[in-house]
Length: 296
Image (cartoon, rainbow, N blue to C red; front, side, top):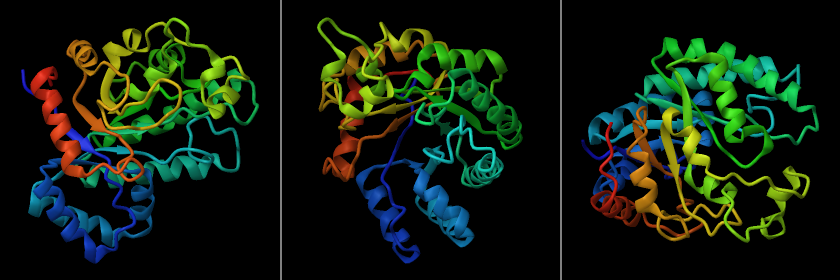
């Protein structure tokens, strides 16, 4: 048993290339050992191949690893994108992101199934997502990557929907990115009602949010990585773990039973919440000392 590695979303995509060395030195001084590649950074790397080599150099120099990545998402990038004109570009783009991730030593790449904003029938959206994965999975497998589909906040990616996708492929290169903050929002507690949820979540559920009894329970055997951030149960605040209402010792205790879990990711909104990287590193170390002796 040993503590799982934690990678941090530090959003360095706005830094110029000549600032990367100082950034990596700062990360090392703060004790960050692993970073997650953000979706904006992946898009920038696809446009600037030289930057990939610079990241490889800085990673080798400082020993800081790129352990995980979040593929671009939203309109034009989600797996269930129904636009027949956009879909070939989407798939080619995601494959290019996989190449970049593999070149930087990334292990897991998180993808979104997508929303129901298009108004298309659920079966159509479900089929588009599976068609996307049927093409993307071989590309990931060839590069030694594990794709992780995430529980977000929409009818299109409930635990039942995600389990249906996994059952359709049964691939060791496909698993779940368990998002603890999203689970806290979607898990029902006594007295929790739709009208207290933030408007943009209610809208996706046509005003009647269907809460889950226990998001983690059914997903646990398939979790390969986790997005860890906190909230107070009604809005996707992306607070630092421990600053909201999630019971982190209890959660880590349950995650110890996830047989495929290989990494954790701090997905707090560091800038908006004014979280210093050192504070985040120390918070996760403290949580690790208390409860997070998880197996790899």
